[in-house]
Image 1: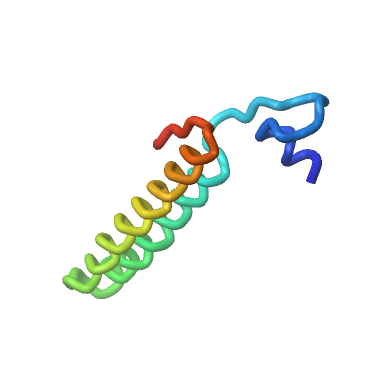
Image 2: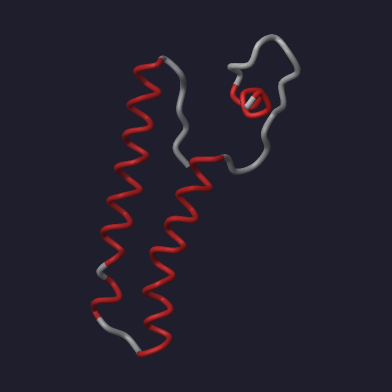
Length: 85
């Protein structure tokens, strides 16, 4: 637990580590998008194109927007900055 706190700045005055590259929530979103859209891509490769393969795209876009929007609102209320990808 203490190790994770060092990355976000909530740890007591000890050594802090700068994280590089993609971080937790961004990686979660990328994995979600790849798995959600990957199923449709695999179905398309297996049986050919169907309009049902596209049904997940609006749901994925709406889900990622909703999560990103809620994170931004939460961090704004806490008084910390937030950068969207």
